[in-house]
Image (cartoon, rainbow, N blue to C red; front, side):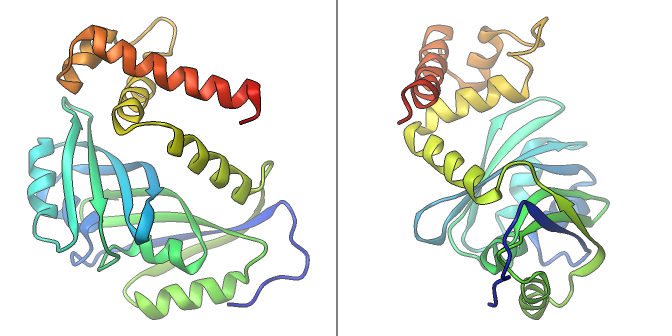
Length: 230
C-alpha cells in the first residue's frame, strides 16, 4: 500500500453501505427487525477483535442467535433492557467486513445497521493513500458501496489516539473494562445520574460492592496513566 508524502492532521472520511446479509452487521438488523450501533471496536492479539454494540428493537438474545450462525464469531449480553449492549468476539476476519476495513488501513468511526442496511463511516489517515485503501477494501468486499468521500481535519492524530486507547485497555481486566463501559454508556457519570451503581451491578450479576471495586480499580488505573505518565 502506498503512503502519502506529507502526513498532517487531516483524514479522508469514507461512508459505505451494504445490504448483503452474509455480513453479521447486516443480518442482525435484517433478521431481528431491530437496530445495531457500534460502541467500541477493540483489536486483540493474533488478529482477533472484540466489538461492543448497542442493540434495540428486539430482545438482545435474538441478535446473539443471528451471529451464532457465523463461524469464528461468538457473543454475549453485557447489559439487557430496551437499549441492550452485546459483546461480539471475532476470532478470524471471515465475512466481517469491518475487520477487513481496519486491516486495509482505515479506522471505522461509525457502524450501524437498520432494516437490513449497514452504514459504515471510516477515516483513512493521511499517511495512507485513500484510493489504495478503498480499492483494497472493495476488491475484498465488492458488495460494499461507497456513498460519500470527504476530507476533514482531525485535532488529535488518529494513531496517537489508538495507541493511547490500546495502552489503557491493556491496563484493565475484562471486568474492570465492563464496569467502566457500563457506567459510561448508561449515564453513571452524568449529573444527575441516569443510573445507579446497584442497577449496574445487577447488569453485571455481581454485588454492588464488587461492581464499585471494579469501577474504582479501573478509574485508579486511568488516573495513574494521566498523572504519572505511565
